[in-house]
Image (cartoon, rainbow over all chains, first blue to last red; front, top):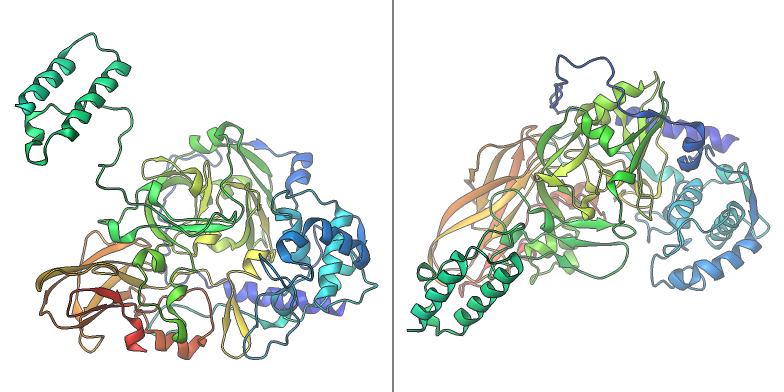
Length: 194
Length: 418
């Protein structure tokens, strides 16, 4: 719970700092709405609850969007060997595609963009795998399989123990090593180079 | 003699009123074959009737610019041949590509956009619905924030790299679509909403969180590119377009917008498209593309055949509004001259700059630097190293340089300045 509160606070901070992103741009819209325009055109249709449920798949750092289900590290190893190993290697470090596993401490620079070294939120793993993985058969994994492979990847990265079980409560509570590394963009134009 | 025979036959062919389109093509091909067989000095296009009209045009056979494709991975990119283009507009079939799971085949009639979340009326829009709204067209650049990363490392500064290979993840188009603010007005954004998740309909369901301020400012739901429908590689039939911001966030094949009060923290705004800084931090949500310029001529692998007058040409752009000045140096940055800016200078678009130069035949190091309306001056690589460190990535908009050797051969010259 403490982790959740901290994560929420840092999100709000980023969001507030972001609100100045449009500074330096003209305040007038480049596309003025025609004066004759009605209050609503209503050209689309109302979206049904079912349709929203079908497409609303994103998962946020506070766990919103996570489905029912659960998976263990051990189950995740089997999922990984079947669906992931061919691209990411036997231990997640060999490639040929993205290196997933790395636990080197990040002092001056991240050694790479591995899950253990760089990813700030564990929920992003669930969100991304559900969207886009495995690359040739995206969407093939069940919720249980997705939780399991997330648990396995977190374990390979030294973030959770080998008896960890991931579900909608456990996953958002995981604190990632790189979580507090991220800062808002402070570039604002003008004479100063940032 | 050949020539008169040829022109007579072609004349007969094209003036015959009964020739079907298929036959005409065959006849034309035959004429062209004979023409190609004719000795070089005898080809005179003013003595042979030309080809008839056609439904879709093609480039001249001798003009075949192409994108640079690095590999055939599903997540990959191709780069615009900046050295082969004039003016500012990028032909749509040469617009750079960056996909994360290939180019999806989408039928426009089946495509739908869902807008939901913190809104009063969640709605679905078909393409016909969106196209019925009033529309707007505007010319904007689009640049991948990874563009130019190949010329940042002190130890691996290239010399034999083209402007296409280094900075070809940049293109400019006239985009047509529906201002997003008009649609958000219809669905009724609720108080407290501050972000929006944009999701594509490709096999990566590519997703980015967008501050609502930008969505309400100059964001487009774009379906047109340079007068035609957006190309499949650019997001057909619908893409989000966020002028001046890093390309990745202008989500292609757009199928869902969820209005929220916080960012979703998708992979492409955490693990990717974040910029490590010296000292152990990483910059996140670094959306705006700062001012930058590149010289497209002369550049590697051109060689200037002789001394004398040459026009140095290039492109400049900024995500913060208009470019106000481009300067060119031919002595490695010791002295600068104002380049001419091609008008009109559009906001968040590329501007063509030109500088007439009399080359003495001695070795020269040519550099350009852009200034935008906020007073920001395109930095040197040393300035970026100082503030961000030498191992950052993305948004590497520092000044580039080309070295013209006394032989006229041009190579990438930034290594001579570091």
